[in-house]
Image (cartoon, rainbow, N blue to C red):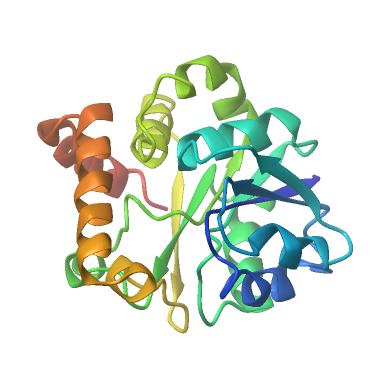
Length: 224
């Protein structure tokens, strides 16, 4: 089955090359799409320097959900690999481990568990808002209009809801060498704090807090 890798990026000039390096040429990945979500830095220029990448440049920042929806609409593969653009330590082996459970039919959805995911997520064995996932395009493609109505960071919890409703088998894949830098490191303390608050607010606008708790419980039950 064809795998389309989608990487949404916003002001990730300092990090995106390290993410593209293991993605490009990976034997299980057939298509790579990067969506530059209105970056003010050199993200697009850096991506354009890599052969084999389809670059979509949005004229202004619309948020992660809109960036993903844009790429999903154009992706050719029946399987989607979603990868955040800021990862540190990502390897080809990590990508293989995430793709194979779905590719082999052992799971319907796979989700990464990064080294620096919150300790609570490691304790429960699930990062329910991880940005790194493999899923069947058929799960999300019928809902692109609904995505357009979501807040900027509502995608993961919306996808969780779809997965739970479909009783999808979920594989949680440990990524012990991979970290995602916190927003305070990327943008500075104050702007990073505002970003975290905004992300939490968007999640709760998409799914209220009791619903988020129910998602975690349901997704743990669906683990394989």
